[in-house]
Image 1: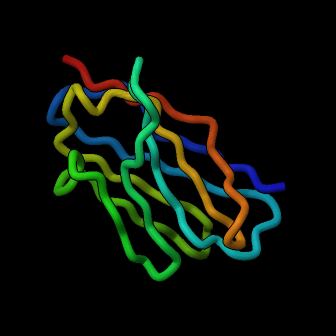
Image 2: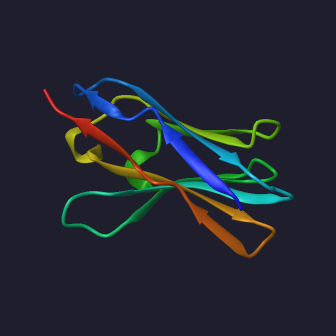
Length: 116
């Protein structure tokens, strides 16, 4: 059974930075895609960024130039470096792995609050 453990959320002032991490544990044979989603209060969950096993990345327009996704293939970990954070970035952030081309596994979520 694969589990994802997220860390790095918290309270930050506008313009500040945070780095989220999501590490996988358990029986892992092939991680195809790692992604970060977020869900703000009263809104639907949306894709923030994704990275495929060939390190091809994709970003939501709202975060381009401020947020970078990266992965450590050895540690089975994905990171989300968030800079110049804005109040509208406030949300619960979830990581999701696609394993073996068919198995989707979600993390438990970590809260990011951007406020002065």
